[in-house]
Image (cartoon, rainbow, N blue to C red):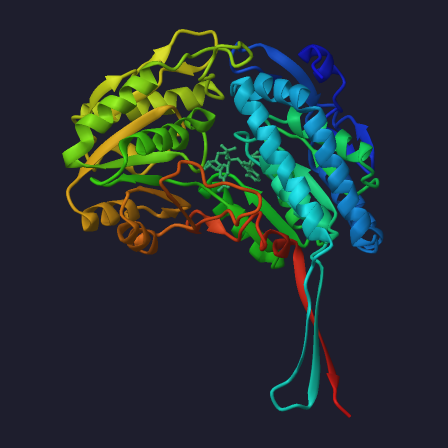
Length: 487
Ligand code: NAD
């Protein structure tokens, strides 16, 4: 099904959804959503504030007991229907996503499939919540260990994967029986609004999923944290904001899940299969125009192959077509906003000023829109800013290394620890490296590790907890012990 994007956007909710109803902001305030490929305003939404935040969390609190009592099979079936609706409407959702975020339509469709899978996976997990029954070691007590929903949850998502970052949280929250207040990113709220109506169509009861869009995130999320109603915050976004929210959550000892920033090393060993390595590097670097927490930020290449690897990567990058993501022949869309473009340009400028050579790209592309040319730079000096900063753009930075020890040391020389990639044909080296790399996830000869059936998350300052996989639902469950004496 495809429709005109104007009609699709006109049919979306206002931006604030409380107790099953769309409403305007209590203050009457609104904000505009822009298309990063054209700079045009594509929607005007309600701009929520403290009063709207209060209404949303109170609705989530009221709905919690009834929702927790709904049989898991019913919750599972709502998710299953929502999965099917997402698949049926993939073209429409992809069009909305590309319009607000910029990624090419083919990638947006890929994200709809990926995002929908979280609903399918958690529809299957909902009915398989595990418990435990045992005797105490002294034989005097029976332990019955059960799981209960954590309670009302605060969900906060970034702009780079507008659908999947939402379904990765909403799916397990529904499966576990938690109600929600949800604040999508202000740059890309439209995809989330579509999902809210789709979930209602799938049978989600009023009050379970409440949404507040806002340009003052702190003015909505902090009152939720301090409400005394919310029991958990699940956040995906940057490390500085995550740290601030952790401090706020400490006040009420809220449970937290934190999916934060990355600075992924991509290690190409001398024995790598170069076709595999270049394909994986393209995927790890260019997925989402480089605007991904998993993006290969530092491409460490053995000195003996750096010239050949660099040439092959350059040929592939130079062949990519940049443009408006709704056009058929486009591989690389715009960055999300001017600030992002300026950051990428600044990081490349800094690396070049410290001796890096540009093999292709290295400059902005004329607008309108926030385009940057696919770029490869080589000979990047270790003190360059991009070594410690998420580039979040289509820039592949090549850094030479001589030994495995040196590669591991450089790879781990960051406060982040989300994902690392290793390209090698040697099994022993692959396993040893994967053990030594400080990361929550390691990709061996592959450029994408994300899968709803696998645990996604980082160590160090990349976060706390895991989304997806077998542990994803646990983030939304509390463990309860019932102790019964043996008489
Ligand atoms: P961001 O931290 O600026 O914003 C993320 C969300 O937090 C948005 O909804 C934003 O409105 C909200 N926010 C901002 N200030 C807030 C405040 N004071 N109080 C409460 N909420 C606030 O990040 P971003 O620019 O939207 O996203 C990019 C970042 O997200 C990158 O660092 C990227 O690595 C990270 N990310 C991580 C993962 C992961 O799974 N680890 C996935 C995607 C993105």
